[in-house]
Length: 460
Ligand SMILES: NC(=O)c1ccc[n+]([C@@H]2O[C@H](COP(=O)([O-])OP(=O)(O)OC[C@H]3O[C@@H](n4cnc5c(N)ncnc54)[C@H](O)[C@@H]3O)[C@@H](O)[C@H]2O)c1
Image (cartoon, rainbow, N blue to C red):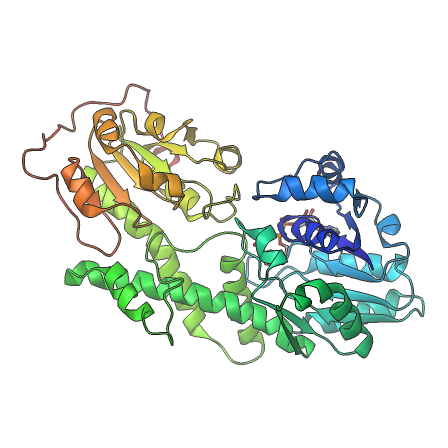
């Protein structure tokens, strides 16, 4: 089939490569001309495992191409996937301007009988607006609207797209269902479950899923605060809870909280949608509050240990919102770094992939090339993103390099006994803090960082 993908970002580009990989002819288009230029040269605009290879393979096969000309992308198409951004407005509502713009372009250029599929995450009711736009501006041509929410995870996006847990399609016409079944046939033949619903159900199911995952994380973080006060271990509490299959262990890890492009805006959008529908859902506001508190709790531990932050150098390990990506949008690590900078600290960050995007987001952040450079003369390390490589740190070397051996673990990645043995003060999240084991030398806080300490905005 001929597939057009509008919006070639994290979802659109991965979707394009996925559909080309299973045999369809895919044309991706985007209003970002520079992005299209990169894609035409085979360069993915962001890091995602296997994506560059997938793009190269499918471009060479002739099934995958990109154009900035939407009319050209829509010529002779069977089905259009709308994968544009749906960011939050200041109110928390989803900003659906790009959805409207895409619908108008489809109305103008797509052939009769085209199926328009919402893949972007949108509030229930959006398809009605899209349909009205197509009817109003489609010059009498017939269109079919469908919803096919995306559940891929950044960091394993292509693999998730090729082997999804389930494919959800919200449809209102036999033509949409037939097209979507044919499109996904290779995955369905591999045993992937297809869930067919009406359109508002599909739209709402995506928001419900992300809100529930966020709720689990905030639940774990609230438990972490309680465990810290009760002298309990939140990881063990989560293990006990998770052993019950009715609960499940996933997404019960306490730490710096959720971030990224999806969870924060999707929780807010569902909260606003429920308010507008006359059923306020304050539980969601509480999920957001606990999540914001998670960053503050980690910052408070650093301040509690080091007292005044001026002239203190803090290394933040991990800047991406999660491992496996260079995406720093709404990253809790960036929120933490900003919070520490505002309190007067000198902050140096390291991330295996997200350094450049973090620097763009937070220009005051100093960047290091590796963990050990970041740790040099630091008064504290904060583990902020759970990259695997941070599990394998050379602790004696770190201890040697740091001015003061304090590690605050915002992802509970390290082992308390090993940290104590290596001579660290170690503050995990929702688990008892440990001190250096007997015999480890106690350093002084006197040593100042060699780099000059800038005045921070808080003092200006
Ligand atoms: N990132 C994820 O992990 C993920 C997972 C599931 C669902 N989603 C949802 O998918 C949607 C897209 O997310 P993303 O992460 O890919 O965003 P993104 O910012 O990476 O990509 C969006 C793309 O849309 C383009 N665009 C904006 N307006 C356009 C228009 N009028 N016409 C054509 N292109 C346009 C932008 O230039 C950009 O390239 C969002 O609704 C998001 O919630 C994202």
